[in-house]
View 1 (cartoon, helix red, strand yellow):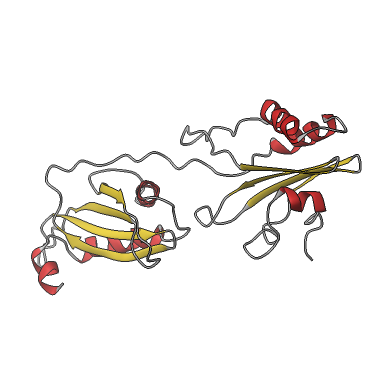
View 2 (cartoon, helix red, strand yellow):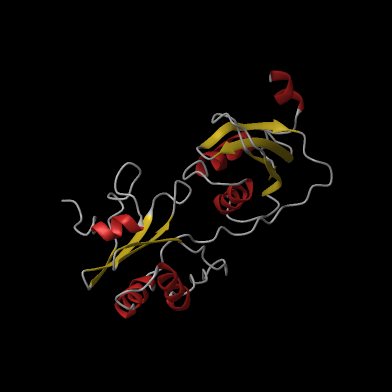
Length: 246
């Protein structure tokens, strides 16, 4: 490693910048190299001569400690014109590895790929339950026939629930939340769930028609964290998580 650092371009400033960007995108962990690349570009305030992601690829592993999302950062430091301690400009590249838990392989210097150009990974879609789902779900539940089948519930949801909005900054349409439907006799439960560790938490919307009365509610984020209430249609049928914890 000493020999690699000694002969591979880079200086203390590029070392510091590479480590800072890697630390900045460590949390929340992402699900792909492209998502980590997008976060790195955001952390560096956009692509420019000063910073670029020039390689990204995913790999598979059964070992939870292995890196599965691999990036190469390229950065340019213009040097200084200090009279006593001038520094030459330097272009340095760093390889860095992540997985679904975050940073695994800290940045270390590597030779820059020949003829590499800055990559432009796609923006990460917003993944949440849109606010517009509340009234739409209430309307669907209230409009169901007393003896609606699961297929009829699914068809009504498909017709009536709005599409996730487009992010005004990235112009990317949001990622749809997952949908779960369950029936218990004539009672109907529906759950919409979005988010995971890559988004920093779980967003949950529950709705049910029980005994002819309809209710739509959002449990607090504390209530639907791993190990707590599952964001499922069964939870909606049981009307759990209606009252936030004190």
